[in-house]
Amino acid sequence: MSGTKSQLANPSAAASKGSKSLRSMTGYAQAQAAENGVGLRISVRSVNHRFLDLHLRVPEGFEPLEPRIRQIVRERVRRGHLDVTLRYELAGPAAVAVNQEVAAAYLRAAADLRTQFGMKAEPDLASILRLPGVIGSSAGPASSDDEIARLESVVARCLTEALDKLDQMRELEASALFDDMSGRLTTIASHAARVGALAERARPAFARRLELRLKELLGEASIDPARLAQEAALAAERSDVSEELARLASHVRQFESLLAGSSDVGKKLDFLLQEMQREANTLLSKTPGNEAESLEITGLALEIKSEIEKLREQVQNIE
Image (cartoon, rainbow, N blue to C red; front, side):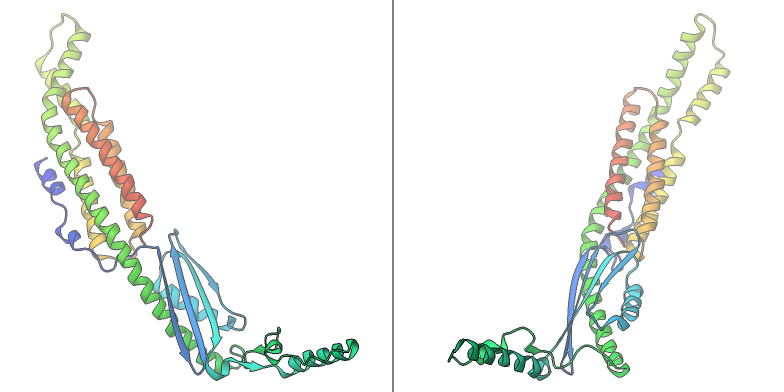
């Protein structure tokens, strides 16, 4: 039992240093790029999800770039609901052009109205330019293979920058989650070590309770000391929690190791928490009686279960 206590009372020192690879699934980032009069802005918003759930929004004409965008995102993100939005605009002299045919149609309509109603006022040029369809882009999105290839390079560079920024934000949030989870692991280890010490002290109480129970059942009949010792040993074995504490210690160490040095650990951590909850439930089921030690073990096991549930809530947001 003392070995188990030592294992549980000393959480891994590596865990206290944090993990650069640990990432939250929540974050937002955007990036911009401009080249040859083309301006792009890509925003990425991420929230937690059991799997990778990717939603793209791209302007009309950019559909050929969607497979490349999805490939880049899947290479960088394993889990989470991601909204990736691409916005496109022309910049510089290429950004503005006058649709002369539309403008001419407005002017003809104005001339007809002047003739019909005998109006002398001349149309205002600034007002004409503000009418729908008069001002527009001199070019649209990619149409030729060469333009698509050129835009794909710009989009890939812009998206990579946005994902880099997203990772920075997700790692920053994961750092806070890491500190919280490390604290809860320390609490679990401390409580479990206390359970081990109490279980050792409670063994004589279990034996006394068994002897009293047998006397109640047998009345004045004598009790064979050998049989009493045998029954006491069986009762002690049924109430022995050393295996549960050893497994709990192993799970805590694995949890700390994953936090400190692995990526894409959310699902693994969730599985470990299921195992830890199972051990906590067994601790409760193996703690009979109303002696002070038994009641304290029950209280500690309940607190361990509570900490495990709080860990589960945090793990839901780990990639």
